[in-house]
Amino acid sequence: MRNVWLSLSVVLTLAGCARKVAVTHDPAPAPASAVQTTLQRQARNAVEAGEGDYELRQLREAVAASPDDVDARLKLAAHYGARGMSDLALEHYRLAAERFPDSVAAARALVTALRKADATGEAKDVLVRFCNRSSRAPAEFFSLVGILEDADGRYANAELWHRAANERQPDSSVLHNNLGYNLLLQGRATDAAAEFRRALALDPRSEIARNNLGVALAADPKEAVLAWEAITDAATAHSNMAAVLIEQKRYAEARSEIQAALDYAPRHPAALENLKLLDELEGKRAAAAAPRNTLRGRVAMAVRRALGVSPASN
Image (tube, rainbow, N blue to C red; front, top):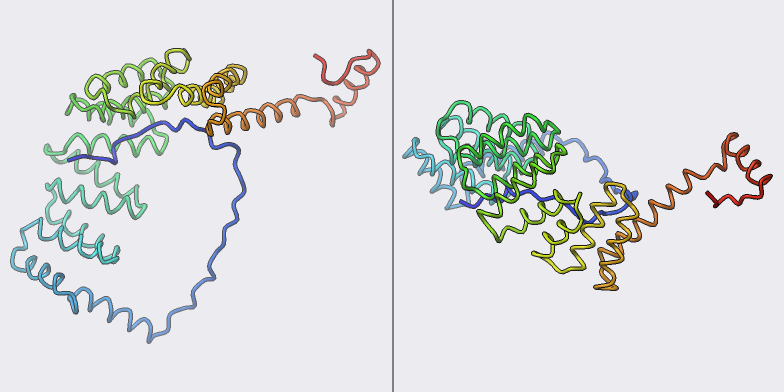
């Protein structure tokens, strides 16, 4: 099974400074009347009973006839989800996981539904309990706990889960990439690069791993650009390098990389965006450094004028 949810990547193109976004809030709905509540309950009961839905009735009959058939229960839950009844779907996924506590399929389906519902805390709890209880827990479950721990900023604990995943499935490019990403979050770029190289040895076509390798090699721009050039064009590779350098506040080096990108492609969108961002950041830094508005700044300006030195001089 291909697990898209395990793949991680570092975002390279910086979005720029935070912008204010106008949000329109819908007015609060009026309280439901007793009649409305009754109608809603009747509608829910009708849906659950399968009225007007022949396929749903068949699925419910299949579950009733074979209560120990986990696939039948999961199909019923999936049917509710496909009909837009996410609350009913989640309810039945929970029932399936409770009735079949050793079913990898039931646990996976429940975790997927919980993540769609933004209930990541409960999803992590389900995974941790399954991994601690069952010897059948797949490596992907351990890695996903690591990913959720990474999202919560618990990097050291996440590393333990990522390493446990790799021990269970050492030949997975995705799992080595995920461990590398965790190490990158911890600032261990050399260790991260080693994991990304292991990922690429297992899957040379993995653009995610090669992309992340470029980030891990940012201390050596030439090596990083070479890594990115293997999956994209030279202009984008230099623009990516500039983005990383901007994030590290290495502005002079970033400007050189942007220029290199624009030499290859004068209208490269990401490079131009990075250039705009860099100009803004350096302008803010210069403004912050200029001693203009404080008492100390006014004294410094008076001294400069007395010495015949312009404010822009160093």
